[in-house]
Image 1 (spheres, rainbow, N blue to C red):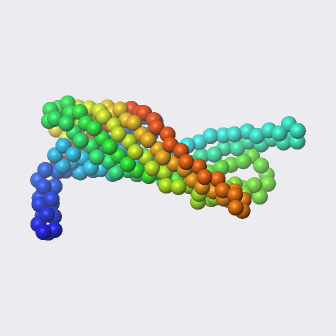
Image 2: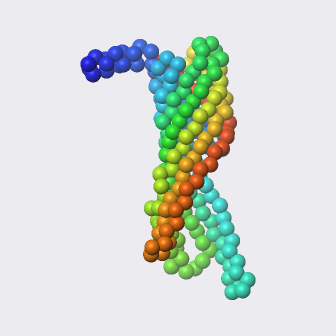
Image 3: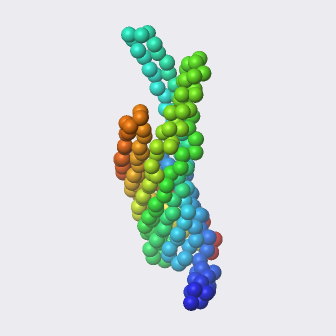
Length: 198
């Protein structure tokens, strides 16, 4: 039975499907995907890549002490997504759902201090922070419209709502723990360029 079902699915994929590729270069978090179009449905693997950076300045008037620093982090967020195209005209509305898990690629913190012990201490703090992080989950739903200006090419706009669940737990001192949980929702818009190989 499994072989028969697999043959039916394989035949359907070859007859009615094709590789699909798209990029969303505009917006706060550029995104790309590669998937497989089966009729009006496009299951895909999508990727967001973004950098976070900032700076800080510390001053203690009582001890006449001050220093500043900079920090940055690189994050990639792979996600499984499904797009549903509606209709068969040149102008097709769509809805899209996705779920993913961001991965921290790198963290860099620099302080304007001459003491090398501080660098080791910062690296240690970063390692502890990474180890204590729970799995961060990202869910998103979007709706938009694609215009097929050629047989295999389309351009489209999308309005998306994303929801992030994050948290972590850390041992500050022996038998003293911090447990943090949080979530954030955000809306965004994007401009998609799509190519369907079928």
